[in-house]
Image 1 (cartoon, rainbow, N blue to C red):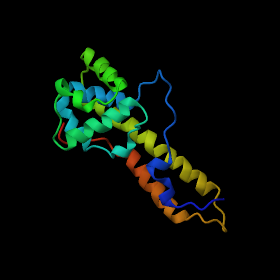
Image 2 (cartoon, one colour):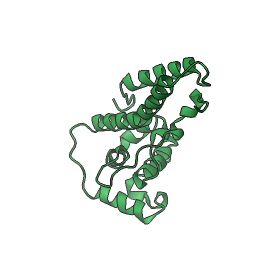
Image 3 (tube, rainbow, N blue to C red):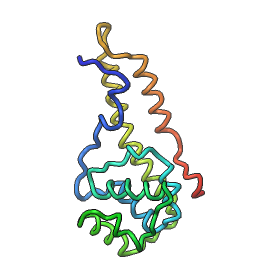
Amino acid sequence: PTANTANDLRPESVAPQSLPARTIAPEQHLLLICLHWEALGKPLAHAFPHDWIYTAHPAGTLLNRFLAEFEQDNWPGHDHLDPLLETADEKALVASLLFDTPELDDPVKVLQEGIQRLRQRSLEPRLRKIDLDLATHHAESNVDAISLLKLRSELQRQLRQPIVLSAAL
C-alpha cells in the first residue's frame, strides 16, 4: 500500500465524477439564482468553500467567477456581464439562464439544496477514500489511522450541518 495521510485527501485530490450532459449540475442551479436573485449572491459567496465548485464545466467556471465578484462587492448586475464572460459557451449559458425568469417559491431553499449537493459531491468521495484506507489498514502500513479517523469525523460533522445563508434569512 502507498503512504496516505490526511493531506492526500484534499478536495482537489478527489475529482468529481464526470457529469452526463443531461444532468443539471448544482453549479447551474446556483448560477441561475445568482442571476435572477442578485441579493442572494453575496450570502452565497460566503456560504461554502469555493473548492467545492467543479470548474471543468462552464457553469462551474462562471459560478466561481461570479461569486468572486459578489465577494469583492464588484458585481456589475446581470445587465452588465459582458466583461465577465470569456467564451462563447459562457455567453450562451448566461443567455439561456436569463431568457426566462424561473418561478420559484423559495430561492433560498434552492440555494441551500444546491450547496448541499456541492458539499456531498465534494466530501462523500473523500469519506469513501478514508473508509477504504482504514479498511485496508494493517500494522506495517504507513497510514496514520488516528488522523484519518479525526478527518472522517470532521467530514461527517460537516455533512450533518445545516446549510445557512445568514444574510439571506
